[in-house]
Amino acid sequence: MPGTNLPSVPVSDIEIQKDAMDITIATYGRGIYKMNLDPVYESVLKGSVKAENLLLSVPEATLPWLNDTHMDPDLRTMERVPFSFTLAKDGKASLTVADKSGNTIWTTSVNGVKGLNQ
Image 1 (cartoon, helix red, strand yellow):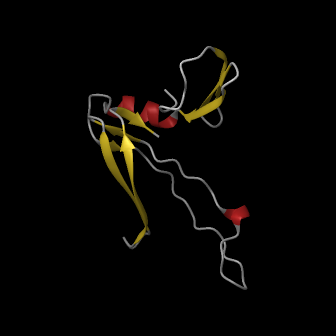
Image 2 (tube, rainbow, N blue to C red):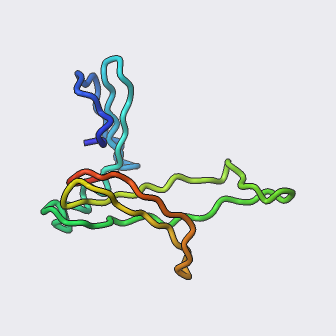
């Protein structure tokens, strides 16, 4: 469930944080894995689990503050924005972030798997 990074090892603890809608999984000796559950609920409600390419809701984000002198971003004001999407089959997916005017700010290509990707 939490991506392809969760190894096939015994799980020692699972916690659902209801306020953030995150599932956190602790494995014995391999680490902690976290996944947001909002996209899972959304994909089930939309019926997108039926093998469809679909971008799920992306929360609105703001750009970080820029420092006065060199205009470099103030890292304390940066935020992580989750991208969740479903794919009908394994393959590449292109993700693009645009401003309200439609100007591209950032773009990347990722390898996705059939079903839910985060």
